[in-house]
Image (cartoon, rainbow, N blue to C red):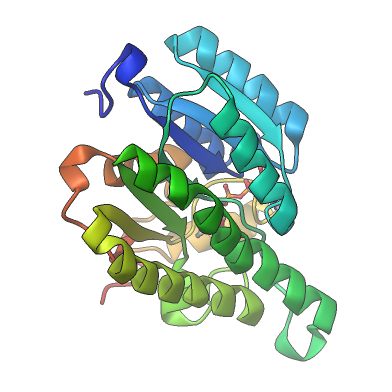
Length: 258
Ligand SMILES: NC(=O)c1ccc[n+]([C@@H]2O[C@H](COP(=O)([O-])OP(=O)(O)OC[C@H]3O[C@@H](n4cnc5c(N)ncnc54)[C@H](O)[C@@H]3O)[C@@H](O)[C@H]2O)c1
């Protein structure tokens, strides 16, 4: 099923954090492309973002661009938004804030720099991108924002990352809810997706044993695939999801039921 009109009617989905080789952002960009969206992929790894954009354009016949971007750089975020507005891409209709970093450090070892970085990438970056891309959505008459939270925000860590990450991801829920209320009269929806453990590279060099133990701790006995999370993000961007806003969509195999 396509969630987008084809050709000149298509809209662009902006995805942050799409370049990682097994990342949720990559799966999300691929899913948007498969459903007929044009895509703009924004990542620290500009080469990776551009390569993925080229692959998706060739495979799905959509317009796609990749950009090097650090989401914690406010001026750079505004600059990329301006470049996208001036490009051949169709109008921006969706923003998926997926870039994120973990923080498995025990609380008393967290220094100021680590705290600031984890908050900056996981929370402040989403503020910068929402602010930069909302005007295009309001002007284009269609807007869907999906922000990436985590079960860590809801249950207080307990998967891999600890306090700064949980605080940042809880901040994402506050950002989502308040922005949803403000944007509802404009018809722009703002939702959060809150995954439990997903099978990506985010945890770095963990062992096979620790990953197996993590999977065994989940009622469904396995981690989410990146594509399962991508499917939820892209559905929340569809016209069908237009009455859903301010929500936290849990996707955790039963690991946290509230
Ligand atoms: N994998 C999980 O278990 C899990 C669970 C819950 C939530 N999440 C969240 O999902 C999102 C994606 O995670 P993932 O597992 O795909 O991670 P990943 O490490 O595989 O990919 C993260 C991507 O973000 C990019 N990135 C990092 N810092 C950036 C910055 N400052 N600016 C721009 N891009 C940046 C990286 O280059 C990479 O492409 C993150 O927000 C993460 O916190 C992941």
